[in-house]
Image 1 (cartoon, rainbow, N blue to C red):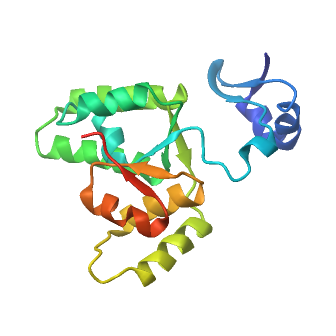
Image 2 (image 1 turned 135 degrees about the vertical axis):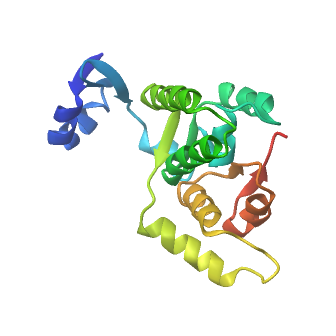
Image 3 (image 1 turned 120 degrees about the horizontal axis):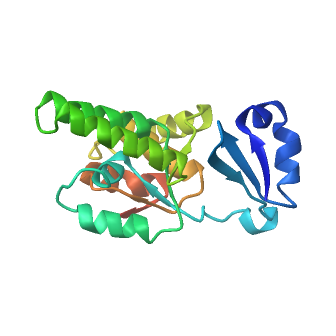
Length: 194
């Protein structure tokens, strides 16, 4: 397998992406593997959902904190082809852990260990962060404008739903009943394992 540094990736993105059509390219940062560029047959991807599942931050959090539903969420994640979420889930995860420290539910030392494990998992490719761009934000705003008055939806949840929909996911996993109730308005199936 060919390798390239992250610096080379930034400087030669187009060339490396085109080369990945013929062979996988391992991307490294300071000698550590951080990503792999893999070939994809465009015809196989057009109009099809991602070969991974979309989780909101509620489910991601359960992978690190033992709460009701954690064993089922871990089983789902471990048996999936990959896990994606909007980039905002990263901030939501860190914020949730910070709240646990402020509420004295988790010690600062334990939180640091969890944060480090989370970052290691990111580098290992467990979490695939999807961008929040103007298309996602416009989709969220368009759906919010047309939502029936009996459907309550927070802005962060609308961004998750729009991100999943715009990235061709067909369902979203969450333990948040409000988010799950709004999923069909984004053309998504609502899923929960607990």
